[in-house]
Image 1 (cartoon, helix red, strand yellow):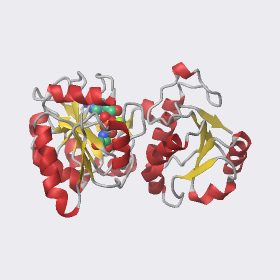
Image 2: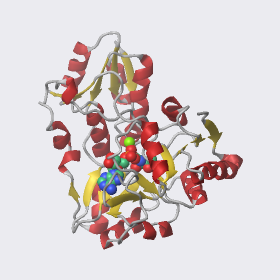
Image 3: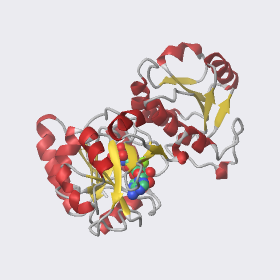
Image 4: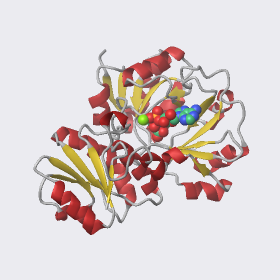
Length: 347
Ligand code: TXA
Ligand code: MG
């Protein structure tokens, strides 16, 4: 299949989104930018389109898709009810990088919801996403637009790398602003549950709705519990998401020790993932900075892009320092530890 790549900015925006929306309405797939990462969209009410999404990504079909809407009035028909906690979170954070899980209505095909009786919905704030979703007039099912298991795409070039020839169209809206996927909260129980940390933090949401529980599987302990800390696990037992091609090890502990450990284990084809403040500490290997500790949002913004850059450089192993576990740091560490398959050395 020939993939059409369309610039979606400035005066071309209207024409571009109209064309892309037309493809969605014909059952084709379109990758589009959002404020978090690029999405791989198809008509969320069309079971065949959802099947195409799974095929294009190489994703297991029991992993549900998020429905994206351009207008809050699109939510009603998709869900059985809107719990009070969800309404409050929507009021505060929509449009924006927050996905909420509801009990689904009959309208949402099982193919879209991965066979679950719930459905995840989000209303992106990105202007290109919003214009595109409004033009589609149907909810758009969209996972991140990467091949299953690879780092999520934060620029059109990443989507082209993974999806060219597999989908009808890519809307190129430039680099995304945030760089890690949306926060996901399940609102179907009596207490909301955080299912994936993201740009909207637990603390911000708790000021709006009070207590929110966290799914133990997404915490640092949860991700690491499948590995013996400090030792690599058998490759077959590791689960890797967001993963670069070379094995990635997170090195955790007091910075001086982390630096020395990485230097000791580095040779000319090793990749080192660090920050601006530390980049001069390393003289060997391919040293890439994700951003600055002074503004952890920069690290979130560049993380996936740097992981992909190591693939291009062809490094044989990657070491990353640990980043703080506060605010956006929770989301960064969740992605980084998964990319490492839970492989961490604690000093
Ligand atoms: O920022 C984002 O959320 C991006 C952009 C494109 O919107 N999308 C994204 O989609 O990250 P994806 O498919 O890569 O990740 C969606 C996650 C998956 O881990 C999936 O299992 C979970 O959301 N999910 C979807 N529906 C769910 C449901 N009904 N219950 C629980 N988890 C659900
Ligand atoms: Mg994804």
